[in-house]
Image (cartoon, rainbow, N blue to C red; front, side, top):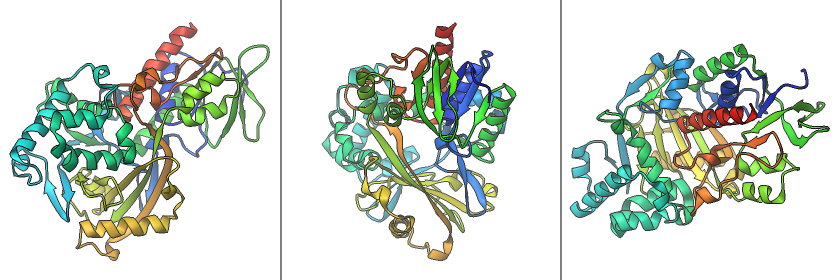
Length: 439
């Protein structure tokens, strides 16, 4: 390893990879640090039973321009498979379809007036362009005002609680607004409906191609390399200290790890900067991948309106992906979103599996133990920053007080939700801006 590379990018997730890729296309010398054996972060794949697929579920929309642009650059966009998916709600041991206008009319949990108010809420949210007008309003107050208390208690509150826990009470209305905006993006581009897609081979296919593209562009990728600190070096510049190695020197460093971790790596930041990073509130995820003997549901997403079910919902990946990808079996994701300090992170895999399988059998009574071929659990404590009231005024600056050091991560997604498309778009914009500042 030669010291003196122009740029270092710390964190080899999709954001860090995209920053490195964008800088390399500007003829910058870049070193990418990743503590895991492979790059990809939340987008990485793993083996479940005898198949390899994404470690967490990802929703790819036809209207995801940044993601599809990258896929096109990697020669993969034409390989994407697109499909119209179905959605349902689960309540009181019953699954209710919620994919068509007829499903909406027949939906029994809301009165005709409540259905009208729900539809009006979604329509108004899709047409609201100035998100800052609702940034200081809680999502509960906003939805209650638009939909009424009945719709909030029956539909919105269970969904928010499943995604945010009790923290929904202090979450900005922009959280749900951004979700609705993304799902309506296709209609703003002229499509009548949104299509969901997947890449054959999963994100593992994309990441393998992406790493090859980075290497071909001259990016030095250091996996299994845990960064311990980033500090000023003498006479100028910055240094990266890694476990078991000498300091490596760079002119500029882009740190892409979560804010909750970034401040610990940078002792030279001011106290004010450290507090700014520390105040970002993250939610984590416990997500089970379940390989089944066969697909259990035709619904890609089953939203859960039942507080007694200990997970957010069910994502039936085999309702979207061709069954041949899974050797004609089913792949199901069972996610739970929790605070990083939630005690469930300390539970054993066996405990979590027992709880999840018990509820899964309740939702699908025909399911027996022999149908479950493999069950694997992922835990990540810092997944997405929760947009609290006035969030845009609290976001840490990308450019730090330390010359050459920048911190950019998902906390800087101000008017969107955490997904691959937003992550890639943010990384490209910031990398181009930082390059322009440096030249």
